[in-house]
Structure formats: C-alpha cells, structure tokens
Image 1 (cartoon, rainbow, N blue to C red):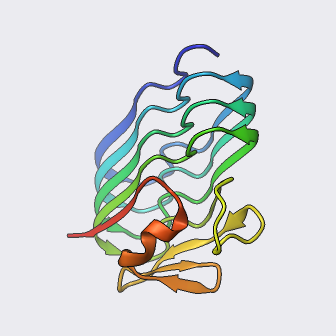
Image 2: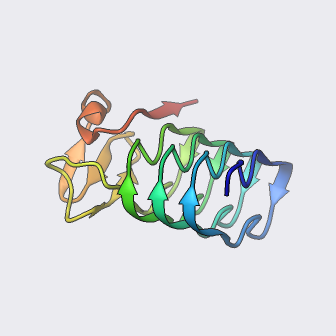
Length: 163
C-alpha cells in the first residue's frame, strides 16, 4: 500500500440520523504513507455515532496512520467515535497526530477509547480511556487530566475547544 488509501472522507449535513461510517478497516502488511489523511464531520446535529469503528491492522506503520480526525458540531448527543484502534507490531511515529473536538455541547464521552504504543504514566498496558467531562477535563484511566496536563499523554496534539 504505497499511496494513501483514503485521502479525504468528509460528511457535511444538517442532520445525521444513522451511522455515517459503520466500519472503515485497513489490513495490510506494510503501510508506507498515511492511511487516512483527513476524516471530517460537519453537522448541526449528530444523533447517533458518526464513526462506529475505525481500525487499522498492520505489521508496520511507518508514518502516522491517522493524520487528522476532526468533529465540528453544535450538539453531540452520543459518542462520535466509539472505537479508534490501532494494532501494529511497530509504530515508528505518533499514531494519532491530531485529535480535535469543537462543540458547544458534549453530552456523552466523545472518544470512548483508543490505543496507542506511546509510553506514559497514564497507560494501562497499551490501552487507556479518555472521557470528556462537562467541565472539559479528561479522565485517563482513573486519573482526571485538566487541559494544562494534556502534554503528559505524549501525543502530538490533543485539543478540546468549547464553543
């Protein structure tokens, strides 16, 4: 897989009533370039999970698997991303380069969980949970992070913006 599999996947809609993407899966021995360059959802209302499962299974991931995952919505009533999982023997660079949520109201956890090879004191094995609270703090495992502590996750960028 020498070129990007998905360069841009975009949904622009006033109402998204059912899951837009039920499953996006890449299985490859070698992924030499970003598999997903941009995954964007712009909607006034997201009533059900927009992305139910985004999965990459690869022996080698040489470059970022997901370069940019962005959700822009006035209301997010249910989890926007239920599962973002990377299974790889070697992750040479950050798996998620940028994860951004821009929303006026987040009623439930936006990101249920995702896995990363990055090391850190908040890891539970190679899996930890991130939940977005009403005060925009983040639960990582049993520890609650404030926005000023996001850098401790050893990810390139995690940004939560209200409004």
